[in-house]
Length: 383
Image 1 (cartoon, rainbow, N blue to C red):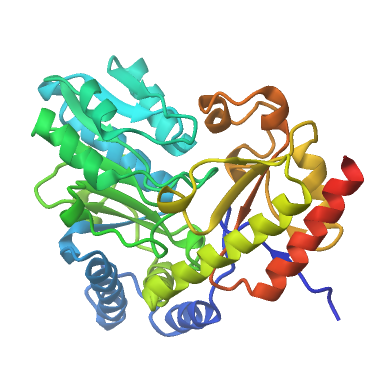
Image 2 (image 1 turned 135 degrees about the vertical axis):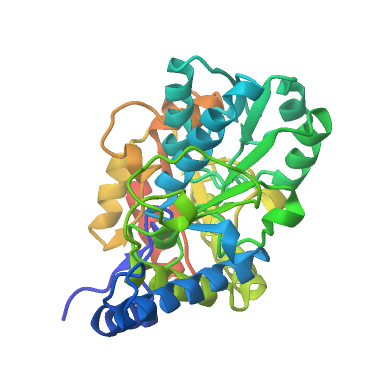
């Protein structure tokens, strides 16, 4: 028999729900037509796609025409940021984001700077929190767009995005507000229209859906310059034949993730607290990075063991089939310190000793007990 695995790296990617695999297989076998084709096979695929669009829209309490299917969170972020900025260049040349965004947000802003836009990067406090007043203070009459992530992918800090939206729009009512919701969709409640969000990015593989599949909520009436050209797909916003099996799989994964969401959130928070208590009781010198309590996501724990190497901790746990990360998977092969931890102004020893543990609804209390014991064993051996 294969060894039992303890997968605690769900913020990098999550195992696909079995039901999602089944529905994708069914669609690939039975609804293989191009959704744009006019014949029966095409109309069948189109029905699958539009049913999925309505599912995502209903979960977000928005209209189906406001959902654009993409290849994932990276494309959604790029489309929202560069698409809005370039389309509205005549309105201004100023943009605002934070220093702790995912690279798929930061790099589009850097690209826009090369194109002549001015960007203000907000500095978080020591827990990774962005004050709404600070965001509003950065906005001026030339500001087109503000982008702030909901849950930080490395440290789990939850930003008060509805308060930030209210603050920046009070300063300039014409500002568009984009939120990277990749790490929160399916885990924390968020209704973009109610929260004052104009664009929201999601990615299926973060909530037990297929990789290479995502969506962008784009409020009705907002126009963007497409990144991809070559067809009238997705209302002319995103060219390319739609991935019907992936779309069906994402919609089912989203619906399953939203079931009993509050109960799941409370359970994840309990598992996270148990893991943290077990580890810090054994190693009280450990340092928690990011916010806790109300502003700490229930599924992400970033903890440092100053003086140790996070990579050695990771490989030590791997010997017991416990899988974690040292931060964002997008930067796992780079030697540079995490830009998120640098923004928190942590010292080098604390940054080097950081690991990220990220949970999902599939994790059990027994798995957490085993992982905590394994982590304590590795830390003791390395200390």
